[in-house]
Amino acid sequence: MATGLSPDDHLSPTLLSVQQTMLLLLLSVLAAVHVGQWLLRQRRRQPGSAPPGPFAWPLIGNAASMGSAPHLLFARLARPCRYSHDDAEFLELLSHNEEFGRTVGAGSLVDVLPWLQRFPNPVRTAFREFEQLNRNFSNFVLDKFLRHRESLRPGAAPRDMMDAFIHSAGADSGDGGPRLDVDYVPATVTDIFGASQDTLSTALQWLLVLFTRYSEVQARVQAELDQVVGRHRLPTLEDQPRLPYVMAFLYEAMRFSSFVPVTIPHATTANASVLGYHIPKDTVVFVNQWSVNHDPVKWSNPEDFDPTRFLDKDGLINKDLTGSVMVFSVGKRRCIGEEISKMQLFLFISILAHQCNFKANPDEPSKMDFNYGLTIKPKSFKINVTLRESMELLDSAVQKLQVEKECQ
Image (cartoon, rainbow, N blue to C red):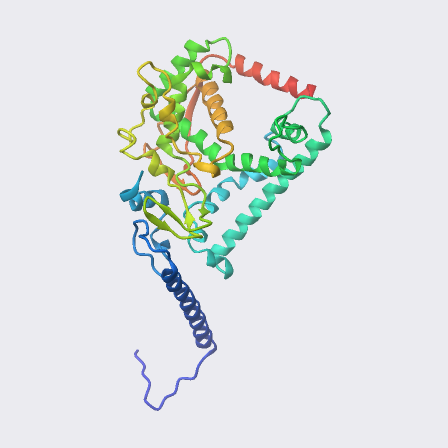
């Protein structure tokens, strides 16, 4: 049944309408302020053209166009100018791994709309959760540092990386150069270990996925390991120079997956010019590593997984080409844990391939799905793993580690 109002009827304001009016007024004022700031910045900009891209709306910029896979969007926009496991505290940190990856991802609205941090909204809530994650992890590392410093015996060999840093901080560099101050040891360890929390575990998942998807590649990796290492011992870092195909597989896995598609955000500290394009001061900048690693100008058939692209005509690793793979960022802000990560990945895949066979689970769908954040992470999957021979070498390695731990 329809109802109507006569001209003599009057509408009295309700509490709800007053709240709506105040909210609308507040949003209008905020919008006016930010539009005014945007127009003022446009007038003050240094002369020169901006990099190519869609029209940036006042207030929200290009946030609505980001989508769930920002590295793909950035690639399209940039195309015209593309050139002990039982430690409860530790397990709690690992439980936040995926949450950390999601909150620090390049698609975060805080990166493109930093003013959202000032007002109550889900974005600010997520940002504060991310800050709490950082505080928890920093406290975890600081506690380990204090325990290491108290238990470290003078002249004793380093038990781990933390000990090595403490030793280094307490010694002269010998050449008069800068040395690590002991107060910076926790922050250094946080940078190395914290950065690898999500990225390294994602890389390991990718290696196993690629092994199951490309069985011929797995077989060739195993054949090289058997030829160089033999079946009487496990692979070590000393074997790496004589395993060019294993290293080619690792570099191709990093290039093909580009599991860190865009770097963490940085900002320009001054007006800059790149390839003739004007980049204003305080611009949030990402390096699109996925785009670099899939550039057809640089890579032949970039969408094909082919480790042999990194081998020269003599079957040796092409070091010039491996230097073109971008996963650890570039310049002064590149990841300080790059070499450690590469060593870990080498040992991980070498030992597993030497000892095990990996096959895709026939009950799993052939199409892979991914989660996008700081990393491109494969969603949960199952694989079939079988021993190539026996557990003898692995058992011996574990027993040796246990003996070394007891002697410390």
